Length: 69
Image (tube, rainbow, N blue to C red; front, top):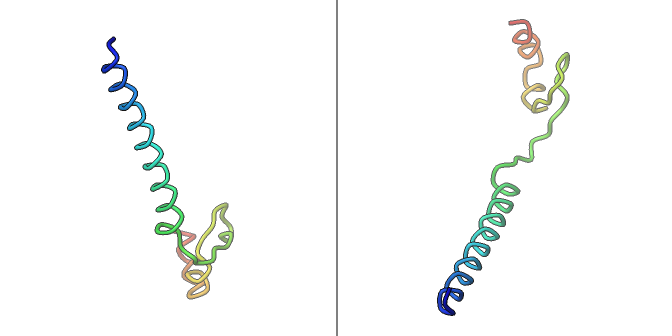
């Protein structure tokens, strides 16, 4: 490999590394601000997962009615 080929390969590797870091940072920032919500959750009654508290409090009878379907 010539000196100019080595420089080009090094520049390409650096560009790929910088691009990877930029993509990672963008993914972390967008995941922490846009996709999450501030709604409170609670453990679902009679289930082993979480549900939104305001949905349950709005109509608890509907939750239990749909639980049996």
